[in-house]
Image (cartoon, rainbow, N blue to C red; front, side):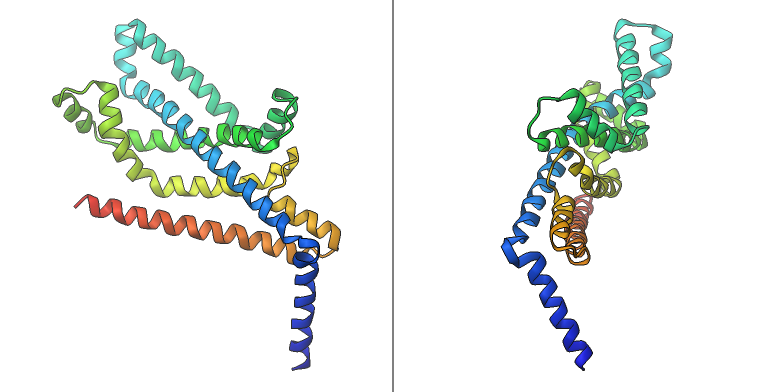
Length: 247
């Protein structure tokens, strides 16, 4: 019984030292705000890039034979854009995100004072490459009959993609997309390399002052876990609604 009492006293003391004294918990809140800003901003950038790159690559893949046979100017432009997209995917997926982040901060935006916009840019570019391949796989899985249905309705190729194919693609790739969003959230933990006080760096800073790493890092892990659980729950609800809309 005395052991349990001593444990709770020690836990309460460590909690007060790490979070209450000098309002150290505020550092975690500021870190959480920066993490959410970077994640949401990068998410928007990544989805926009992903849609564009996936549309270009899937359009080329579906029409590659006719493009090579006809050799039209529009086909050549599409082939050129597809080549650019392939280079982008190869470079971004073939290099570590932390290296891309440091290049963006120390090389491209050398005069930047705030690392949050740089983080949004770097993580957005990185996420866009993975989202693009997720979307491309979803588009390629849509039956060609959907494209024919669009043409029968008087839609051109772009209109068919926008109104018919892409909505169906989103339903198909939603679980995989969730995994990418969760990975993006956790990848932002390296934002501290460019001076951003995210959750991880905030926890590490508290530990550096109190010389107690267990409590701050446990809090950081708990915050990430709660956010991931909330995201998973929201997407599960969205999936159920999408399934109901199919009936």
